[in-house]
Length: 229
Image (tube, rainbow, N blue to C red; front, top):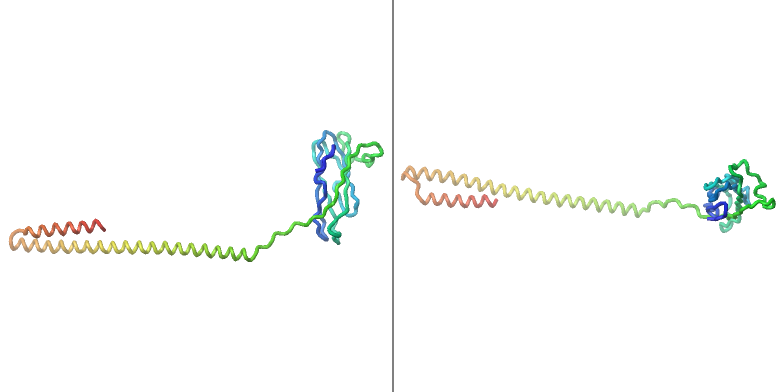
């Protein structure tokens, strides 16, 4: 930033992203840090090549003003992309409440005794901004590979869950079949014991002690087996 007593100018050089056959603009910001009205005027060594808006104006106290400098479309690039064009920004204290209409060429005449500040700005050509690079094919391949890997992993996980679920259902089915088989055996034993008790009652009028013991042992075994399942 150029810091004069009247105006602070930013930037100190005019940078144009040079492109053939294209009109290009850049900006200057003038900041008035004083309590005075400050008039300014912008000159250039190549007025046919550049358009300055506004080229004259008044910056009110404690305020800013933006200046747009536009370079006309160029048919040829300069040697080594070097530019010798220059700008001169002049500033002077104006009367309170002054406007652009109050500015006269005489205000910027040093020979008339006016205290005129001057700031020289050079022109610099810079490389134009690069367009975003296209997506590399490798990126698509990597993305596809990542998607395939993720899908394979999910499929394998589903297969593992299905296998575990199948094993659990098979185990439950096996246990259920064993339980039903034991229950059926118990029912048959009870029927046979009932027949034995009836036969013994008809023949002897009572149930022998051995049958009672046998029924108790069988009941204990069946109860133990049922608890395990």
